[in-house]
Image (cartoon, rainbow, N blue to C red; front, side):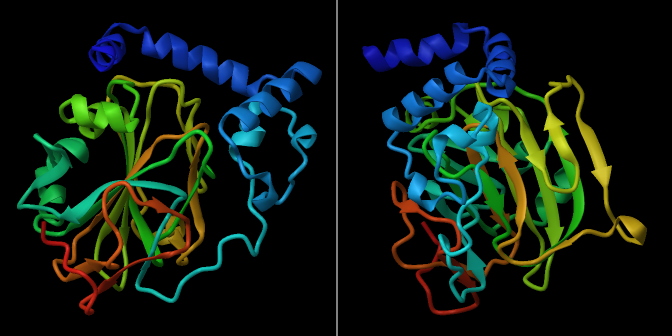
Length: 291
């Protein structure tokens, strides 16, 4: 019954107003009050500051400075793998894309086309490929890195709802990740096309990329598109390079077009993961993605 009311509340809450207020608070430099609030947050969520480049909580002037903190250079060594994990967090789901259907949770699927903003031609590139949905909790490192080297082709901001994306909501809200506001980042690589979809959520202050800066807010009602094909706008990012960040935890959906992509054997729903660990291989002998 408590889960029922928690889900019902998601439909009733003024999520945009709450997110706007949370964003303002997160940007506020409130001196001793902000420092006390950050310390309380770090204690409540057991944030490991020993991994941070700046471990002193008093050094962060705002919550956003704290949320987007850098790690020590040696905190996340990169595995030698075709694909490395792009974030700290936990695996919500991962596996093969069945035609155009992505598995969300028991009884729930959504389409690639819907996730990518309704572009059927673009969605076709990822049919029968692979996906990984990675949940970043409030305690996690909030920056997003490249699973492999790639050239940015396109970025799409898709307007939508702002439901929470925690595991309970993933189980209970149909099509959650394709309903929420999201930023779709499309890349070409030697391993073929891949996409990183940065899914917004209630209370998440903003979504940023390293090449554009803040993409949202503002929360536009129309889909926005940026092309980065060729010319002086060509943007190349190496494996492990930072590509974006959340101002508080959310979810990243990674899509890979290659049908021969495989995740490492212990990658399964619920597993905690760390940025830079081996994620998968292409055409190798790791565990098949078939579900």
